[in-house]
Length: 198
Image 1 (cartoon, rainbow, N blue to C red):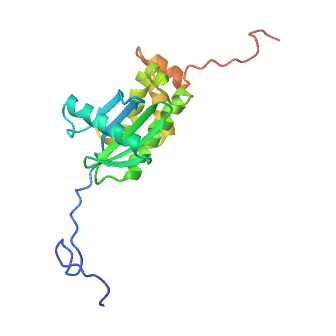
Image 2: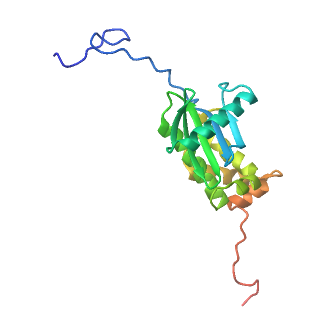
């Protein structure tokens, strides 16, 4: 059989096939950073999950670079400094999920979509800067439910909302009360009977 490529017994390709660089071993640590920047490129939230950018100065330079790149590019995916970046804007904010060059863009995009949908559901509005600034603790909870130390925990926004509502149904420490209200746990239900007997 002439047309079928044959592999030698080792790990390399047989003669006639071009050698490819070996990809890195698969890892659960897929997200290197998660960023939310405002319309001027100023940081609202930045979580770096590895040592790709170890200092605050390097992080700020990367954020400026990624912001200017996303302003020029028209798509949702960019390659920058050997990293895969997926991004999206919402009103006056830019959301970024950063992974390594070998990461699957669809997985990173699923994280980004989950973040935007979960925040939109919790705020019950379009996700914009003033609402996020008023609800920072809720934003941090959402991010921590989606990604932990670079590992994607959840990509379904309904599951994130459900987990957060379960968390707040326990006795709430100070600061979680607002989030409980946003998640709908403290809604008042009017029965309409006026409290009287008939």
